[in-house]
Length: 220
Length: 217
Image (cartoon, each protein chain N blue to C red):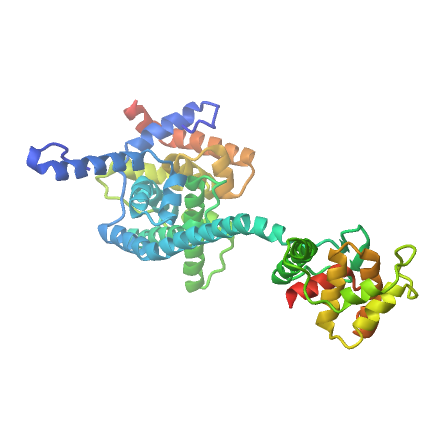
């Protein structure tokens, strides 16, 4: 009796007993063999199906593993902040797109910035370590020029006028070197004044700063 | 299966192999029908052998008694049933019971066979007529047994007197041991209808087989 059939049927039990007395027929051996052969023929297809299932599962697992490994790396290379701040805190560059800067370019820029930060200190070292100042066309002119009352970037500053005159025939590299030289000496106002002239003379953009100049100098 | 699991020390690999086979075989026999079918659909031939051994006789007897056709024709239907099981094993819906599924396939194969025979004889046979007419319209008689096989003869004679739908439900119950829900599923009728068909069939069979039943008691 099937366990689902909760009701006990005496008629059914009687008929089942009578049925049990009957000899049970079985299919012939040739039928058994034919069915078994058909099942065996089906096996390669069944196995192929099983391998396909395994392959799919393995592929999915590999994809997940790859995603887990690569995701942190992808997240590290997120786009740089849209605004870049200068050392003084001013916004010097605003990105117009959201594309991340190429990694190599970013590294190069950072290296150049670092060098630019270190350049004045190196220069100061060179000038104060007893090796004497390098031949500078600006230095004698500045010494000869009368001191202004206060440091200024005014074009009428006699020191600035003298420095510009000394650099009148100099090339771009010399200009940069002298501006950085003045900066290293702590003469920031004069360096800034010369920078303005440098921008005009060598067609540099308005945003071209002392840092940019130092970076270019290091780069070259 | 007789497997010797004893031997001398020199036969150790063979003994171990036999033990492993024995354990595997026992484990295979403990599996449910559905697990065996799943194992076969994964490529295990042994699982199919066990499953086939379970249903070989009951299914064949169901077809034999239900169809009333010659043994050779029943064997064809039997074979066709198993071929369908083999082909569709991977698509078997495990929410169903394998037992109900295989008897449903067998029943459908039988109906297809009746239709085919009827079309050969140029007689239109609908589903109901096919079920109803197999034993009563004279086209398909139950297999006649030798006169000496008295029990068989009386059994078949009684069975032939049942309406086809009752005969079918009774045979599914006796040969396949299907529950009421499975009977309803296989025959495509509500559970209560299957239940009443079975009740009428058993009551009538008991009456018809009174002498046989008394002898067995």
